[in-house]
Image 1 (tube, each protein chain N blue to C red):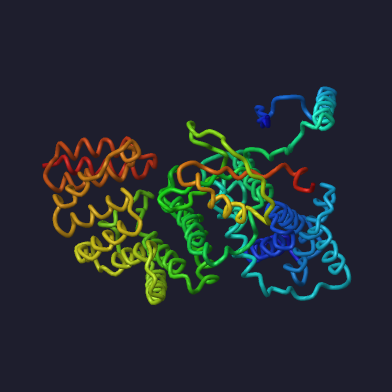
Image 2 (image 1 turned 90 degrees about the vertical axis):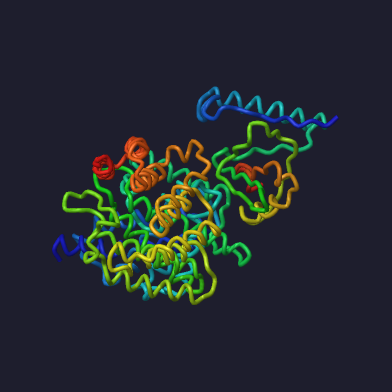
Length: 418
Length: 119
């Protein structure tokens, strides 16, 4: 046993065991997600310390389960709480001591993971807390990694997570899959959180890189988990399809200097055909369930882009129609902006500009970079060079990502050339 | 006449647990609460958990909006309280949704403090 073998074993166990272990333990603790997370983190810390010296246990998952339970019992005893959870855990820990632990009973672990996800995405938690908890508790990211995703310090993120875990316990947020009448709304809440995780990775709001691959991959991994756990939910499949089809373009979204490349200019040969095929098949399965929703529509739009051999061959009328459908299901200025861009491609820049002109430009929209970037693009194509210059300037002012800003400056320069 | 005393403080102010000042304050609480009981003036008293554990529910356009925190609109004023004993927050929110004022005002769902939970 070398040290690197042990490190690799811990790494593998972390990937495979973190979520099921935490989900099961939280269930045994009556839904105390915070305590379960601390105990499981303790168990992995023990593995890091002990495995290199004493060797990797025959069944790493069983070893970690035993240690995590003992740590939970220790913590509960220290708090001097005689709870039902403590008594139940003490029985389980006594069983652990008797002999070589039995192979793990993993029946019900899927249900536990769903419970964990629904608890972390409960609407009584702030949206930020939901995203952070999902990444830490369900995704197993280190606190420092979650902090980086939120552009904040590790200690701030640690405090935020502590507050959220305390609220779960103190407010009595239940550890269970919601009842059937609440389920659709709550599933949508979970999918929304996963979508936000992906979006943060897809256009990183800071750092010099445009894309945070780790967050994108984590969002896809969790969406795959949810779609697997809720196979009859068309929107869960829809989100997975949408993320796969969008992520397929990732290799072509930046050039060799890590600068963003617009969809129009991307080398489509670099798109991930495997992801496109899986995304399209997933979308077909979702649509087959006959219950449309916003993620399925977005996936359908991404599929049309993925299937077009080149920019000019894009089916713009169909994409504009899908954005029309999307603004019916989930209206927002963001959807209108995308619809305007698609209509401009299908019917000319003036049609798109007319739609943008109809938007009620409040303070938030005025600060929304894509609104100005899209308008600039359409004005330039309509031949209004002066209007385009103003809109480009505002878009550039609002861009935080340096790579994206550079690309906008370049487009602005091109638009000024007669 | 019946009155409700709404007790407020800024979290973090007041004597710290473990200090002589804290013990002195506890003695004063004991004294006044005891006298309220003896004079027959006490109707009910409960401690609340912190604002960080609160959840606020509103219904607008037939949709239930659940938010983290106690945040009331500045013009909203406190006009009634109900203490319920149910299995979890979802059950409490289900009752909150049935309050007629939820459609134009709000219902804050705040757990009683952990000492009160065991009582």
